[in-house]
Image 1 (cartoon, helix red, strand yellow):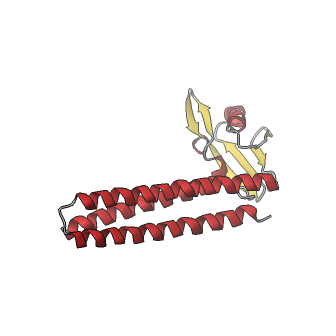
Image 2: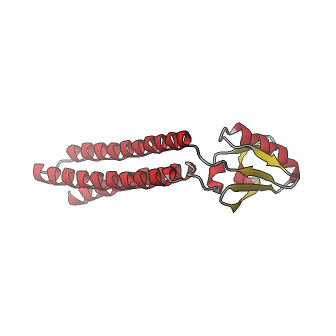
Image 3: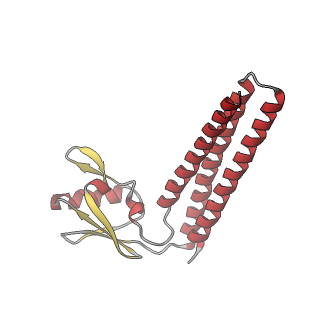
Length: 184
């Protein structure tokens, strides 16, 4: 019986870890002033008739903290890459110099910082919902077990403890991201 409870605890911990991992990936996409190749991770380019991630058709670099340079592996792709960056609606204005697509990352305005902080809060809330769903599922599985009431209560306490730890982790990530976003 204890093996089943341990399995349920491990499965819920895994689900909660997945929520944290997803949150970290989403936070990378939220820019906080400095240029980063991850900012272009959502850009899809029309490449021989199919949509392909930008990173698979070009090399993305950050020559300095305010500039992104995109060097396509085929020069014929320059216009397509430029168009894809514009269509991605990231607020960037790409410039094509014949060899590279250069993007100057504008400094964040106070209004934009507040929007990004709000977006970060929303992502953190999604992660918390994922953690709570994992807790709810684990508690349901425990109640469905044919175990003593004491074992079930102890397992539910363990799951609540896990939930609290992961919620605290999410709040710490959010606080760090907000501080990064609001730093001028």
